Length: 140
Image 1 (tube, helix red, strand yellow):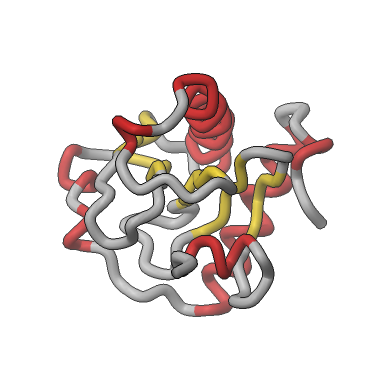
Image 2 (cartoon, rainbow, N blue to C red):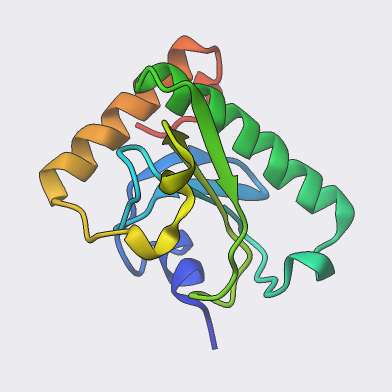
């Protein structure tokens, strides 16, 4: 059975994509801990991060690093957070978000986002990724 992330990647469920390449996508979560909270997800369904092919994991972390640069710059944050939780959806995903304190790393504090605010955050993140020179991977 396809994960909810596979359905988002396939376009069966809408997503606010900020990155797309042949192996990895990134889209905003619908329940952010901070504005710009993004999920970096391999297209291939892999449940446990320890079981992913090392080359694909490297690609995921490379994309997460680029998203991290953009969330720091786009929200003027001192840090970008990176978490792998893997509890809520059985499809590997890396959480990337602007961080101002350690409390921001608590995913239990995530709240459903307002659609207009999520759209604005996606637009801001796409624009920042383009400013950083990653425009070829940023969807319109």
